[in-house]
Length: 234
Image (tube, rainbow, N blue to C red):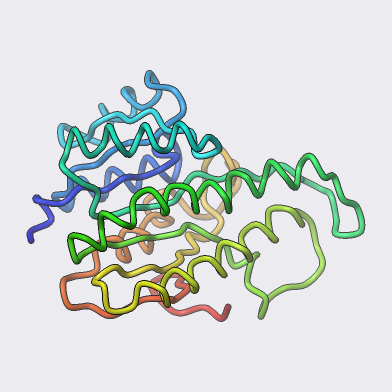
């Protein structure tokens, strides 16, 4: 199947890194579903992504929204071949591990972990049925246990550690189905989350997620964590 026959869903696709991921995927010939909580934001982003983009109202923190969005996506395109779980939040700022804000932890996990899980649960069965799929979870080296130390953003970091674990479990579960599941660390990227002082532009940050999202037929790369197209330790 050619890229032009495939559809990618990018969550959190209306701005920043997600918008650039969608733009690059469209540039490679994929139809792109731009997922965003507000339709106006998704529609505006589609004008940037290009004529192959379609807006999709999607709030990853709502199971009802996820089910409705995936149903609409199938009606519009016939199916989702590529999922980029990009939607994410970083809410705990300067908090450090000895200080727990349970509301922040719950909200962070609901988007960064459970949200990605919700969307994968809704999308992956169709991929398995089709015998092809690419799932990319946008993560961070902050979540790597091998690189873990003390520091700020504990809820964010733990949410990404958990997302990494989900990546490995899904990859193992889907071995042999044609569905590849990987995690991508885009690096510190200028965006709403990364801020204006980040050293990387969105185009550089999007490169590894887009590479994993477009792994060719027959590729067996799955269950990995990558940055700059190179493996990182879990």
